[in-house]
Image (cartoon, rainbow, N blue to C red):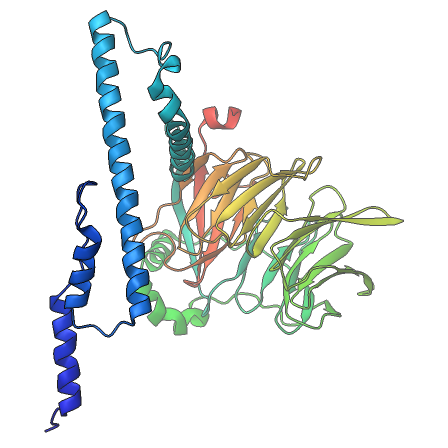
Amino acid sequence: MPVESGNSAAARQAKQKRKSHSLSIRRTNSTEQERPGGVRDMLEGQDNKLPLSLKSNLLELFGQIEREFENLYIENLELRREIESLNERLAGEGQAIDGGDLSKGALKTKASHSTSQLSQKLKTTYKASTSKIVSSFKATSSRAVCQLVKEYVGHRDGIWDLSVTRTQPLVLGTASAVNSIKFHPTEQMALTASGDQTAHIWRYMVQLPLPQPQADVSQVQGEDDVDFSDKDEADGDVDGMNECPTVRVATTTLKSHQGVVIAADWLVGGRQVVTASWDRAANLYDVETSELVHTLTGHDQELTHCCTHPTQRLVVTSSRDTTFRLWDFRDPSIHSVNVFQGHTDTVTSAVFTAGDNVVSGSDDRTVKVWDLKNMRSPIATIRTDSAVNRISVSSTQRIIALPHDNRQVRLFDMTGVRLARLPRSNRQGHRRMVCCSAWNEENQACNLFTCGFDRQAIGWNINIPALLQEK
């Protein structure tokens, strides 16, 4: 058993003795003359090892503090007396306190400056603290109605991206082992971006299945309604549930990047594609020849996303350097670029709308709406409580779908008014980070898709009231 030494025991006793004699500052009257001596006697009576110079400095500082408190206390008493006398005089004369006569009094002279500063500070603090709360309750009278339609399972890992074809037949594509997937605007072709520093173009043929008997339909619905824990156990039997056509050989392979290709998209017309990579560059390729047309450099850090305009030769790229860039290829002889610095953290995605707007989302928990005609400052800012991943904007209803790290998906209009939050519970909605969202304008029964790290994609029916559509 260890034995406490004599030195350590003495030190412990001295420490306990110092704790028992705590230093206290008492408020005294200004007429008391024995204050410095009393404090000095109290300090000297304690068993402390402070040097004399440090003791004197402490005494002087304590004295200054006490004098300041006394001055404030006396000034407070004088102000209180003046307020009471002024109230009594006004009450005796039967006048209302409207501020007309106060501008000539002594109270206005002494207190107007300090009270105005305090008032302004309180207003600023109040506005800053409530702006986030107020913005969440802008639209409460009529909101979007969201219903879960279908859950798509089968992946063994998180789903990074998803896309929907723009032509019939409607096909939903999900990217799990790759980073991005985008369908050709008119043909049955898909563009994928991969971590092996390449992008691939795939040609596929989709044939709609024949109608199944009612018994089989009910069986499929029962399998879709199983709990998440049951899905984990059934992952090994996914391949045996139904036989789907598989495309294993790519039509075209695009090789020029020196890092992970994180995203890719088709330019208008489908003859060229653009890719974004962790090598801090974006490449423009010719689809027919697979040749590199342009290398878009300028970002200081890894790229996170790229998107093309639906009707014009415009490309926007986002990066971890907190910026996104707009590349203009409308003039073949001039390829201009504009840099926009509106975020304070990684810009996870920036997408075009059907009009003249760009919507950017970031890890700084904000989404900003920009006007292409004047990109100096955003026309709307949406503040959220979680990082925002790959967003999408409805081309017809102009609604922004925000997938979050905290498993939520929220809907906003272009002015920043919150419309709805997609339902999420133990048996409905995403259970892990939501990575991407994609609108499906051709099917109103299931017009929004989301995917996440819970290895599933979900189809939603979003019903927007006519009142919100008019706005």
